[in-house]
Image (tube, rainbow, N blue to C red; front, side, top):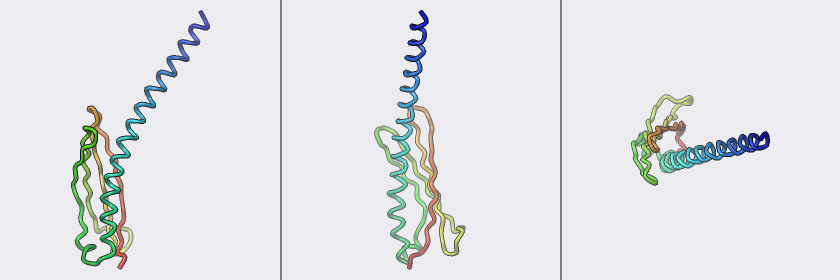
Length: 115
């Protein structure tokens, strides 16, 4: 009887760990898609640092992408207030809703002219 109780507790803890790891895997999956969306945008914006005209036209954006039925919305805002003179700070926030569970992540990037 004692052995059966110990076995039941052990199996219950394994089941709990398995369900938690599945949840964390799903969160990591969605966070990766959000990060890739921001990274793609920032790579294109980074090229603008090398041309004075393009750097002057640098602005924020609002974009939406659907991956595997989950809608990701990215909102990037540009601020001229940065810690270094002539730099600009961009804050990108990505939000998504997976099966009724809202989630978001935020990235901050500083642009400086390279010309």
